[in-house]
Structure formats: C-alpha cells, structure tokens
Length: 292
Image 1 (cartoon, rainbow, N blue to C red):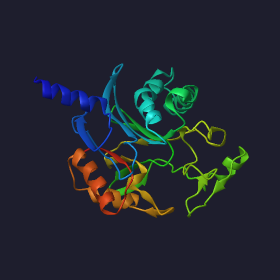
Image 2 (tube, helix red, strand yellow):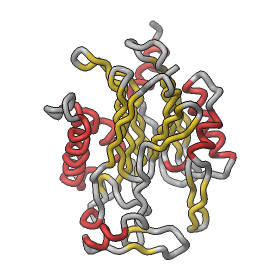
Image 3 (spheres, helix red, strand yellow):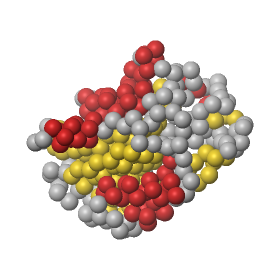
Image 4 (cartoon, helix red, strand yellow):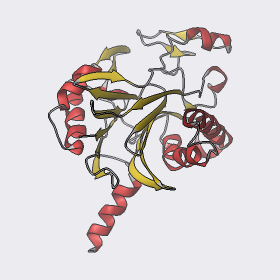
C-alpha cells in the first residue's frame, strides 16, 4: 500500500473534520448488503467546523456493531471531539450493554457528560448535541439523542423519526423547574436563559443547572421493510435566519430525496447539497446506512 493510500485510510478512520468537506463509506462484514456513507460540509459561519462524526462497523465479542453518530458542537468544537473519542467506548463498557442496551446508553450519556463537566477547564465552556445509532448484528437499531440532530428511518418509502428534537419550548416546564427560563427574544427562536436553542446538551457548564443530559432512546427492529436510516445535524432540517427558525426539509422530503440513490455516501452528499440549495448555512454532517 502506498503512502498516500495509508494517509487516506487513516483520515477516514479518524473521521476528524476541521474545514471544508469530508466524506467516506464502508460496509458490514457480517451482512454484505448493509452499507454506510457519510459526508460533512463546513457552513458559512466564521468559526471552525464544529461537527464530528463516527461511522464504522466494529466487532465486539461474537457480534458486529454498527456505530454511527453525529456530534454538533457549539461555542467551540472540543466537546464534540471529546464525544467522538469517548462516548461509544463508555457505552460499550457498561456491564449490561447486551442485556439492557437502552439503560446502558442512558447511563453512559450521563457519565460522559459528568466527565466533560469535570474537564471544563480543558474543554472550554461550549457544548454539543448528539445523535447515536448502534446497529446490533444488522437486526436491532438502538438510537439515542440529546439536542436537535436527528435520526430518521425509511420503511416502505415512509419516513419515521427515531429521535426527539429537544426544543426549549417543548421542555419549558422542566427548564423552569430547574430555575431557568425560556426566552424567544430576539426573534422567534426559543432559547434556554436566552442563550441556547436546545433544551438538552453535553457540556455547557454555565447553563448545566438548567439543562438536561438525559437522552431519549428508541429501539427499532430492522426487518425486510427497512430501507435506510439518515442521521443528520440540524442544518439538514432547519436553519436560523435573522433570528427566525425556518424549516429546510421535512423527514419525508429527506427520504424522498435519496430513496433512489443506492450508494450511501452519494446519498449523504446529495442530502447536504439539497439543504444548501435551500439556503441552509450551518455546518452540516450526514450519515446514511442502507440495508438493502
């Protein structure tokens, strides 16, 4: 193998994005018909790329796990980078991962958030949303998320959202019970304490007393009707323009955009291009996993 090929493989393995676009793909060794592809694009903001992605298959004991995640950082990228390196490791270390996968994910999210808060001097005051998907032996999909990155599955051509958008307006009571408040000023975007446009996140030490790091977890069986899943940061779905929240595309529109694209990597890239054509200016990361 030539030096350039080695460097390219190392680059795809680390899946570390600092600027511009990056892309890659792979497939399951256990189920050859399952393929994944990812694509990331730096937005038009002045800061560095704040998205980090995991997209890989990994052997664990006698099983194969598909590990897919998008971490969308804010106020810096260090928390998102930390999650990329540690969250799945923490999930897989849980002693009852195989028996009570959903509980293991919830505990690992919380313990990882505690690690991030303890390292706030090193990682800074920022935070990150997360959407994670673990595909177990190609048969069981377990999705966890905090924030507004999203997971959508397509079954028989119909989109079904597997994650929960943790918007401050929907969790106003919880935020207020913690002593915080939700403000729509300026504009019409609800924000925790007038600052953060999501109600749940990793990090954000200065706001943590009013924020939750409790994930929503969903289990979906992968049957013959399952065609593909999409994991994408919020830039695919919505955009804040002049302090007003504007929809970019619906779940069904996203599914319809790529339903005839067989190559998962090309599908992820096409979704991002479609979002940009609809005036999305955020950093955007997208993973597509095709089952058939």
